[in-house]
Length: 210
Length: 255
Image (cartoon, rainbow over all chains, first blue to last red; front, side, top):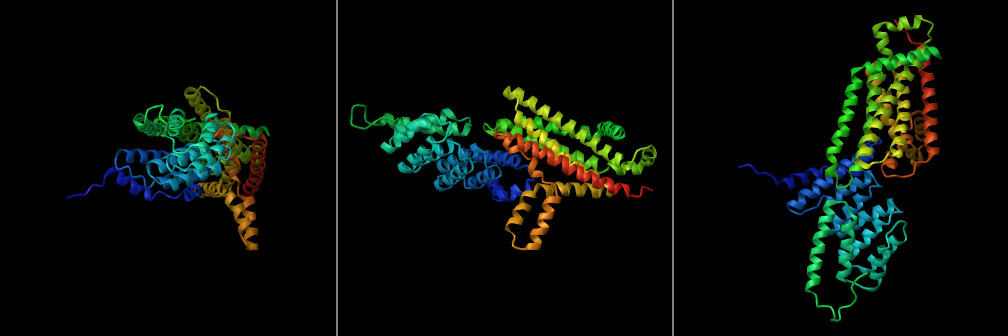
């Protein structure tokens, strides 16, 4: 009787042999950004396969590290990778580490510190860190004014689901990444159900978000 | 100079008749078409991938043309015995080498700029915009290939086509690591190794200087000064290599 490895498992095994970003960068001979794109396509396929099967993303950290080592300016790889690692894979440390790498490589970008604040708020419920990173994002050029509102709100309130809902809605509206939109849609639906079950307005349940 | 340009024109005509050129151009068109198929899988990164694939295709296509055609430039004439006819006219060996180089580089420049035009066409259709950064990066690739072409002509004048092809490709690979060579000179504690590495760093072509693909793709500013320095470097380096090629060819037995 033959044993067939499930499709997702077979591809996970292949990713274990995927070379490191440092090695590929040297081997690329000036074509690192092209290799980064090929690794990105691989990362997207990997996420899609596992999302539809076992939801086990243990190689996600490796593949997103490869993409961002080959192309340190690949902003969306940090954003998507950070969300996948922190939210879907449940590995907050790896998600934060990836986004820190992004902040170091693209210091003028507001979105990466904002995503860090988002992850600290949503995944770690760490208001102090969330506030700190929303403030960092607010100091970078080109940020929307909602960043400052989130920074102010996290300073004043903790754990408020209205803020979480606003954050997910903002993410849903600003991304072109179909997987991220789906992720945000699911969270928005969950939070709206949670808010519908909450005590009605008029009872003493505090402010309603930025 | 007229004789050199005459040989250059003839080289362009010969090169454009070479079926290898059309196969490679077709390959490049297929790469761009294939790239459009990958765009839906890229999760919003389609335009980045289009630029990356396009610029890399231009660079690699140009390199293949240089390696396949450039290294047999002189040897082909010797093999067919037509070299004797050419040199029996009042055409010096130096003019012959200069003309061959100019002709091959002009062919490569035409093909690469044609590819760049095709890439711009794709961007115009998909994004309704011309991307000057991509054009600048393509121009730098043409200057990078000027350096590689000069080396191919040198090797063509000195050794067999197969060995010349290997040496040309080897020089391209080594040139891609020029940044690492410089870093090695800074970290090594051995004086002889530092001296040797310095020599290699200056003798081998510094191809990292021509690589602005990441800047073009990510929309970073491209400094005109850096562009000018890279173009000047290409011209000076190629001239030096061509002078060496002319000296080698002048001493070569053609019987």
